[in-house]
Length: 140
Image (tube, rainbow, N blue to C red; front, side, top):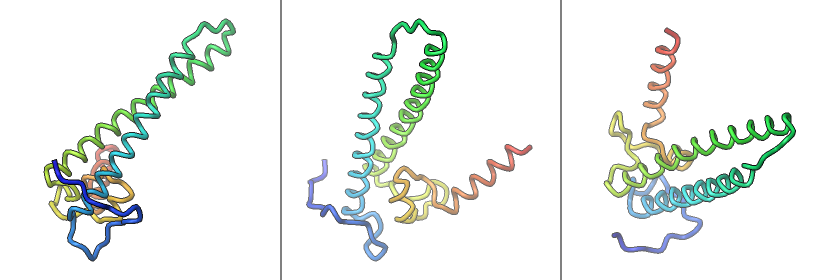
């Protein structure tokens, strides 16, 4: 386990410091852990809400509306579950020393991209190439 060190609340990774130094890694690790904690908290409240909603509703229109709401909640929860898995993968990349580097090219992913999307595994250019290939195959 790495030693904890002071990281100011207002710290933001900067282009003029060494890429993925300890401060940057700690910044992204904390960002990912906080995001995960928020998602898990939302998930718990969703489960509690679904359990409370699992009551017998006699009116057919109200029941249909309730079922639609439940389906939406479950889809949202499934997306959150997948996002938590991506966050866990990003945390593993931090531990393995692979975080911040493009899976396709091995080049550094921009700090701005990582700050906006800390689970990113591709540089912006590689992501755009991937999406163009995906679109071409989808149009076939």
